Length: 274
Image (cartoon, rainbow, N blue to C red; front, side):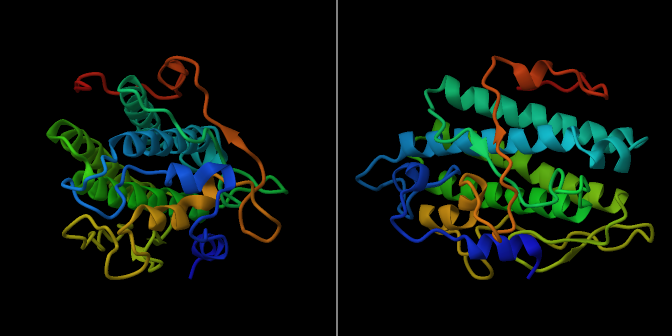
């Protein structure tokens, strides 16, 4: 089990824990409560509120990777990878805007990350931690959006969940590309099993045939409580020995902030956003 998995396992939430209102807000991601779209209880408001929180978390992650040594030094000269990360920040911010525009109210806007994700006490960054965290979160987003497609009550919301899921899947793939370009040989996501990445030898294609809810192996993402257990550490001030850095990272709610920040690369403007 890698450092991130250990940290998450140590800090899993028990059912009913109310820290930062998480028991009431039902987690971070677009997911239902284990029911179906025919459930007598409409979960749409809970779902889109949680989804907006997830997109804020993702935006903050990409924004701080861009500001870190992995981006400025580790990927120095690799404009493609830098563009992937800048585009990732823009896409997650756009998802957040769409959800808030639809009436979503984010449940948390302050986040915490594993030690070494951006910096550590001695100022060093761990590229493996960066990529593992990125893949872990994208795994979680994909799984939860799949659950959301199952549980949302209208076709329009289900389609939106599917549209966002597709982008999160691209992010996971690009994370593996970035890992190889950083000289890493594997990534470890929610499954806890290292996954080989394409390196100089040009092997190790991704063998995932379907996006997953992790219902049979590794974490069980079948209910919203499962999401809370896995991602609770990212929204709760960490305790000593948790494996998470106590530094808080705040989502900037200024209109279009993440879309107007000057990137160090130029994004391809030939592909429409909608």
